[in-house]
Amino acid sequence: MRKIIADSKTFIIALISLVFGGIWAYKSNWDWEPIIVISVSFCEIIAFLLLRQDPIEEVEVIGTTTNINERNQNVNVNVNVGNNTPLGPTPIAPTKSPTSMNEINHNREVEIEHMKTQTKILFIDDDKNFNVVRILKDSGWKHTKSITDAKSLDMPIIQESFIFFVDINGVGKLLNLDSEGLDLALMLKQKYPNKKVVIYSANKNNNPFHKAWDECDFKLEKNALPYQFQNLVEQYSLDLFKKSR
Image 1 (cartoon, one colour):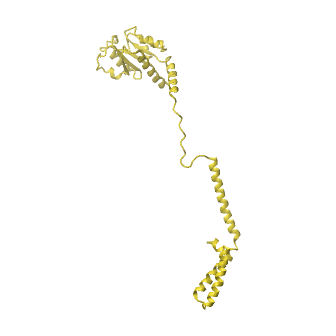
Image 2 (cartoon, rainbow, N blue to C red):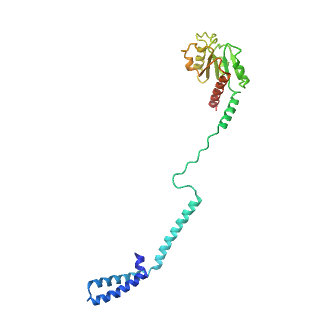
Image 3 (cartoon, rainbow, N blue to C red):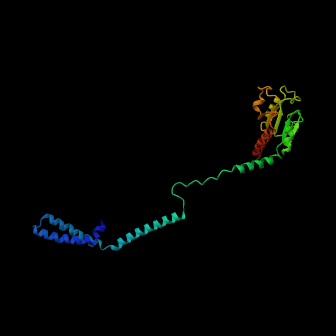
């Protein structure tokens, strides 16, 4: 509104209206309508003259506004150029890609090779020629040992072993156990719950309701493939490795 009043064209129109209004008022014997035109035109002229006396202030205000806008634009440009982070929530950094299967397998093999020198395995079997014992030793499990029976659960060789393989037939006689190897295996698991006890037998139907079948860690047939025995040794030795770290 202030710009319209201060405009030169408006001033000229106001002068013309003032002259026209004066002639109209004279001819109409000073009717009220031309008087209104004269009044409005006169006010326009007065307002124009008053506003024209303050041009510098207007320019300064406009200039200040312009400078502020320019500074804001500069700030926005600097921020956008210097920081590529998009607006909105801070994006989550991409997670590291999963370890490849080759790396997992490699690490597993390294751990197993290490545990071959640490894991102590004990077979309790009256068969001195059970070939799985020899196979494990040949595979690098150098702390694999065998006894034909156990005189006590506190024997040093039992205390220091981590994995037990117990034949359910022909052992446990020295402790006068009715269910022989099943009773011995159950006693070992109850006395050493953190150790692994595997039972095996050539007789599939030997006392199927004995508690040892459920409480021991695994059961195998005696004629199972040697790899099945070795696979259990690897698995249980890795469990030991994780607990020891």
